[in-house]
Image (tube, rainbow, N blue to C red; front, side):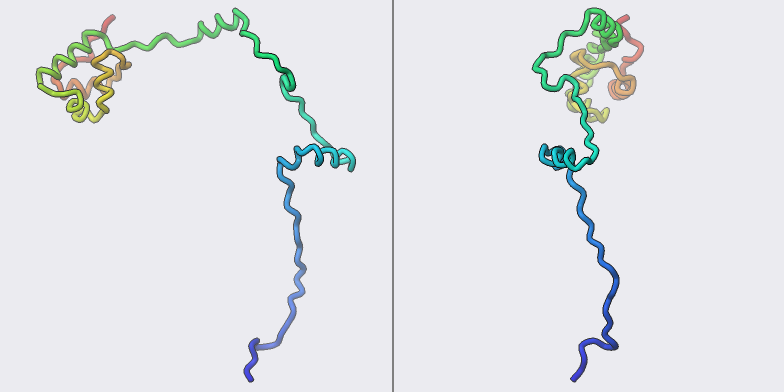
Length: 145
């Protein structure tokens, strides 16, 4: 009858070490675990939270802080000047293009062209340059200042 194990049978005498898993952070905050740690003499870290337990609303910032904040705010961004808006629209209509067609030719979204024609966009020199090429009109030299 053939043997299942070829060769001599030997035992593995390597020690097996089992480690406990670390307690989770939520378990460490549990009041029972904290009380048990205090009783056993283990160090317990307590941190007082800012405004903990108070039901007070935050007071308004002092006037001086508000003035300082307003002083550092950036000025309103310049929008597309009226002359540029009309030039874009006029040139587009002369070429019998829709806003969508113009947007496709300059590789931008239709919304971008709409914002330029409505004066809501912040002028971007790259977009204006693309529009100049497609429409054949000078747009970047015109400024409302």
